[in-house]
Image (cartoon, rainbow, N blue to C red):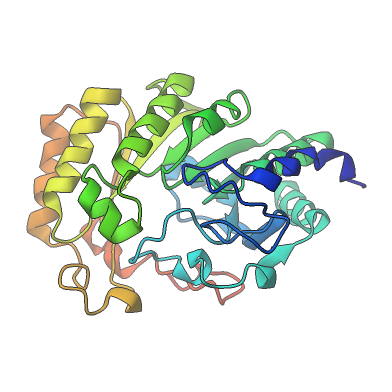
Length: 314
């Protein structure tokens, strides 16, 4: 099928301001912005992922589309093989026809959900993929799996299109966000982004007959070693500024990648004492919906994007 008629949203990328960086780069040129992403489909992998939250993966998994590069540069990122903006996106560029072929092949296998991973700097491409898939008669659940560094205006353009928002809330402390992710404005930006997602979806997570999420919002927080105070502040923000009824995914899976193996704090994993304190705060705040990872998760969830199936060894 010829998908040319669906490419109009890419015109936005001649003057790109779709994420909070607002670089105004022409992504059709060689003068790229912060994310160093071109205007086409910079995608590293499309595959069935069974390692998300139970409400997202379900029993059979979710078709995840992993975009390359990122509008954050977290020094500890577990997906650094594809998120590093110093690498070339050309080596991981897919034709739209191939993207659609891979996604529909997975949908034809019986999986009815598609996740966009690190999509904040690829919103026009997200919209195009959705339009193309729907034009072929498919109607999956669309999941927006982001780092939380999103523009509210851009998110508003997704209202009525995205079924489930799955954002991170990484930091409440701007100094930490600047040092670890090159984004000192992350707390303010993410707060506004999550409030927009909450406006669209509310606190209730709606499930289908199989117990997988079909509409709503789940907030993720990865606990970092040595930064208990930041995690406690994140939980307070969720309970006090959004709702304690939201589903929360509290993650202990942090592990030091080679890039931070000598960092004074990030070279460690999260201690049992740190994690217990944060888990206890959930109860104190009346946050009862969601998932808490086992502390042993730090030895799992270690993707290798040089592999055809990056999470098979996790």
